[in-house]
Image 1 (cartoon, rainbow, N blue to C red):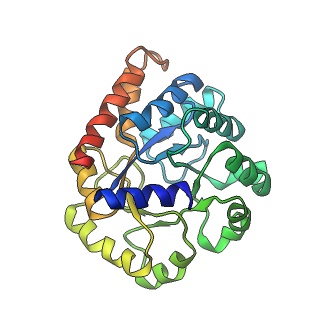
Image 2: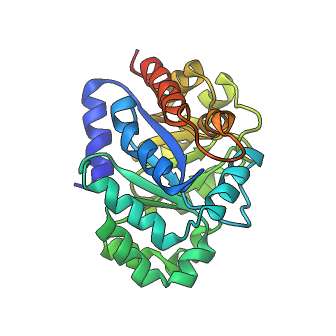
Length: 270
């Protein structure tokens, strides 16, 4: 059983959903990013999503775009992100790690070598934002051969027919993009989520994680109960950015983000 499947199975026995915080790799620098990554499990992260900085994102709003630019300025590359995961795995063998990013860096790296190196570093899943299912053969076989789950994205305007077409090949969990738009903008209403999740469950038995627009502990708690997990990204990065001094980490950076994560986790676990 993969780490992702094992974690969701364990949480099901506990009767609660998962909290998945997002971390932009190398934001604002390599060591601060690694410190945050290492601190997240104890602060309440059930799974961790790591963003791979990319210069031309399509789904990310201003907050995550700014974080990606800070990460790139700090020297982030795909290879260095994998090294960060490897260093995390020296201390944590259990928390599932998912990389979220775009296809161009993977294609430049070489999909076969990337999947082998990602698995060796300790990555469990991949979310490739700009890779539609029709083009997933670029990655799917190499990912499967290395035990990596390629996680599908679905949106409010994904039809029932489309769900039945793409979700049978999904692995790990399904990422429900709760709004039609970019990250860090509006939030979906409780009624919108209540209508969307049953449609997804009708097409797949995989856990469903809700992302995009989840900012508060109350929203995270509701999302993790309506589905199986809540993904919190821009809210954490906004907090991180507020602690920086001319783009550099301060003594408050790591504590502030982990404090916010603990508040989110407490709400999810209630």
